[in-house]
Image 1 (tube, rainbow, N blue to C red):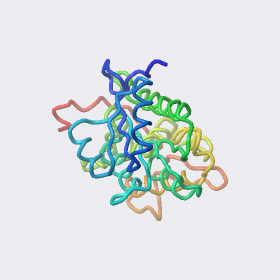
Image 2 (cartoon, helix red, strand yellow):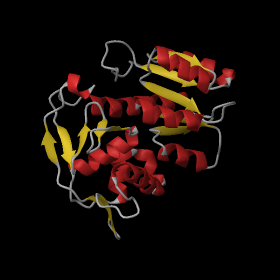
Image 3 (cartoon, one colour):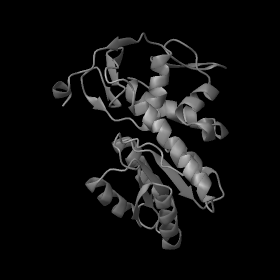
Image 4 (tube, rainbow, N blue to C red):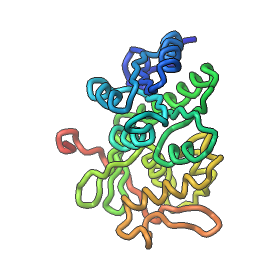
Length: 255
């Protein structure tokens, strides 16, 4: 089976970092993914994964939740907030709690052990396609402006009215962009969940409420009295702002 087009925009295979302390699972899975056309690196801990990512980024991280030392959820939070890297969580737990938390902090998908490797490959390619679509917008796509805020959709960079960059996760970016593409329109939970998390998140409709709460902490002066992202009783949420399209900030000015 051919590899999916690289979301990194290169001609090489997609780079997958597999982070799992269980050698008996990690090594055979890495070999299988390599045969499927991915460029796979292995890390047995979160600390090793951080070190490897400093030397070379990954297009996607497969991340075990339960590991000695720093756990997978902590590393997942760092990856989605600081790097915007797509993450698929691997968990052996039957409870939904870890999966819900993972989705809420921005993971793109999860797989419960034991899993069918072909299904995992399908999910990897689905997440990579979704990530690639977000990154291959036309080079001249304009920024979004709203209430003196600015969102650069190509660099996923949110700038506050004072000109400071505000870090947002990939899930928060997709949520905010959904609102900016539909200003002053009521978007119900089902529609937002589909836009933000994809097919799995409909199982956990609280995840959109938590994502809204996190986004409000970043764009509202007082999240207890929101003025930008409003709750519409019985309907969903609405961006209560006009949106304009702005010419991108020149690269030298953005630094």
